[in-house]
Length: 125
Image (spheres, rainbow, N blue to C red):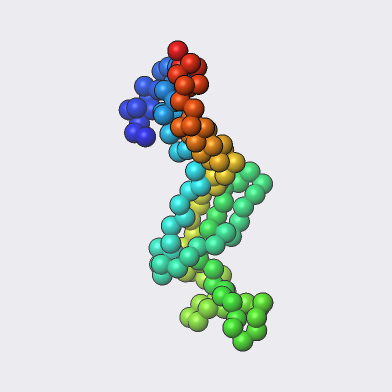
């Protein structure tokens, strides 16, 4: 939702928000963030630090599964533990993930609303 539309919504009392706009804001606020690929090699970033009320930090791990020893890790070829590649690949998620329960609640609300539109009309008036 664009900023101009958001500003207009926040000028209204929350009870006056159109249902579609309210759901759009909830979905935007509680959706899980998209974690970008490593900006250096394009690989998948993994969680490196999280919790304690701090942002979640992702990084391109220097480790991979060791096919010779299942369940063990080895350092990727060309990498050395926590290296410059790791430091340069870090991505910080200040949104701190999403909330799948809120997203499920919004999904169920929309399903119920689609099945029983008359209730919504009575509530809206």
